[in-house]
Image (cartoon, rainbow, N blue to C red; front, side):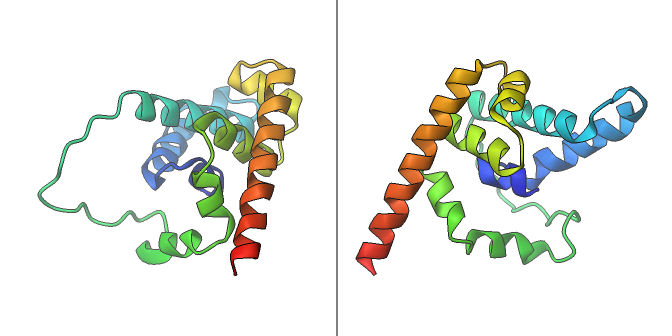
Length: 139
């Protein structure tokens, strides 16, 4: 969940990913990497094909969390607003790094070169450092 939230996703993508994992469990060799890859691709598809469709009623809260309002507590974490301000690719690569993956692993799972991953990580970390410094100076 934290991995997906760091990338700007909803709990629905996590639920769909876990459902797919359950259905293919016998075929999955590296469950953690598989789930991260599937969830990342689902998020990219969602962003690429997003169409705004207003809803008359707000859907019921998800049952993935013990308390449906617990997701709001994640928004209070200092890093989330900073991550949301990053460009999508930098946010995605940084989320993978925060989840413990190396640049080589990230490159393999996202179909990028290791150099491109390192460049995105460098830019993301530099931007995060600048934003945190600005926040500290503004307080």
